[in-house]
Length: 193
Image (cartoon, rainbow, N blue to C red; front, side):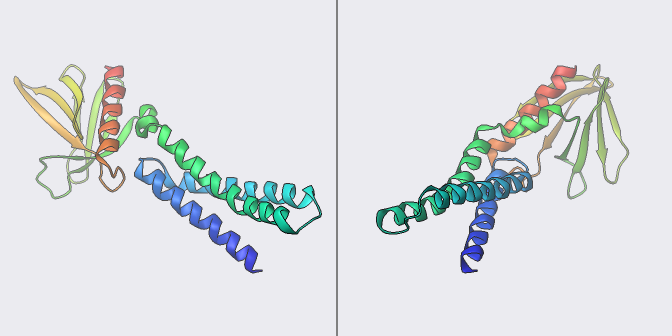
């Protein structure tokens, strides 16, 4: 009974660890935590079958190796998943999207929250308490990552105007992830222009 409770604690603690590390890297933490639970349980089952079925002697060094195998193998799985999530770029999911939740800097309202949508012929900025703003690709001169910001230079009448967007810091927690995220958005938009 206590063994199962202990194994359950290990499984869910490792899932929490994987969730936290995936979120830190800008990935979907829930998906990575589910993968962690599935693979850790699978590793426990396979290890148990191999260890219990391998030999009938449960004394001395053989016992030590079996207990270590039952503990260590399931702990390797979350570390492998964290290593894998570190190798996948944070903006990889961004390259196939056509709408992003961002904050528009310089807005009069407190949040600046908006959705930037990529259309076939331009961009649409949808704000919570304002009309949609449509920018055609003819109006847009430049779309580029500017540090942690996405800079869109566009022309209204004869004046060139900048728009600066920043990703939400609660989802994209580190500067490195925010920079990769806005550069991925800029690449996606520029590929369509």
